[in-house]
Length: 205
Image (cartoon, rainbow, N blue to C red; front, side):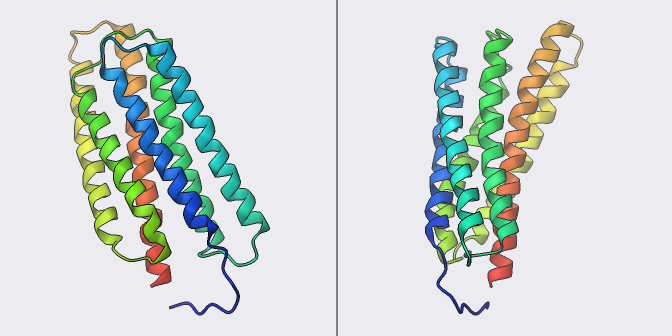
């Protein structure tokens, strides 16, 4: 256990919790793309606003690191965690943006599975962030995120197998692959968040 000899800036915990809460908001907006009657333009605007809010939180974290003498855990880990959380939101926003730009009216049915995995992982991450204060009861979080990431990988492979079965137009395949790639990247970024939390917990134990 590391010995503290100076007061530690604890506002980072609140900022990470706030950042993770934005992921829940973003994943909820993302899930609305599955509704064929959704206003894609309005949804895209809402998603961009959410992404900008997430960026602001990330900037606040970085600024706080640069102005704080004693951080609650290693600066490199703070940067890595903030960056990974920001990446998740970036990829979710990218997904919604691509659906609008490519004017995709119908998504593969399996995309719903990817989005469900993403939503659940975002909820678990938001639930886990406040526990960074005590570093307790976090192991189940990173284990479950790893399981969800594996589930997302299986969905991703099934989607690709369907896209490349020769029954789709080449241009449509390219468009849909970009979209599911962005979803896959978002899920991978959530695993990066969980891995960083695990590394922090191990160092602080």
